[in-house]
Image (cartoon, rainbow, N blue to C red; front, side):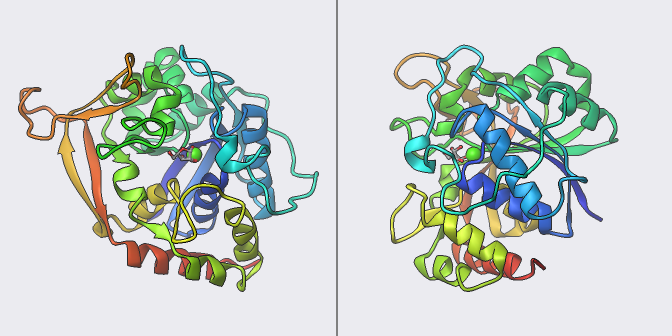
Length: 305
Ligand code: RIB
Ligand code: CA
């Protein structure tokens, strides 16, 4: 039984790796990719999503729709210092990688979700498209099984000491998503900074098939982490879907700080003391990092190029 998903993404090097896993794993059925401004501007994130899908020969099967150019309220701030000006440096994808569909991301999300009894949303950029979707088409919520979202942290941020990039980029959208009444799995820095891709794993990628060589090219131009290890933040969402037994989670109510110096911080009711026992998220709090590295290499080695 495959898991039907939609990825809303801002490629981005780790997004490209997450798309690679989602496109090629037989247990995942990737129905649609929507792009959002984040790591780089939305014209570039859209083009980068198209490049990855074209690289794997899936341009006729997996549509890409362009989404929000700006966060809902907060001024846009990219992460080109981490992902390069293009968002995906280090590999030549050529210039013939197709076009996005004419629908906007919100329209494409609405149509793709309403076509399924239940589907999983996997946002790996800011949540602007998701918030706009819920505001414009609230009826989609009953068709969404869960949201497995890369973003946030209960153990310190990477933009400020409190806030992680995806939530920091659009905290107002994150608040709408966390209050939408849909089960959320929070795939935050709490685990993505533990499951670092080791230098040995990265070196082995470069000696593999063309998919490995492509990822090696991108990851060796990635300015997150250190030579001791590179965080594949977004890949952890797909790893969760395929191996939830390798990740420890804790259910709690999660709020989002939308103003002040801690803007973009997630605030977890870790003792269940302040929301009448209600919870809105399963927060990922630990991961088997060794297994993640082995799985990453194994997944890529199975890709027939
Ligand atoms: O904080 C990490 C997140 O921000 C990842 O999704 C990365 O791609 C960037 O979007
Ligand atoms: Ca991302």
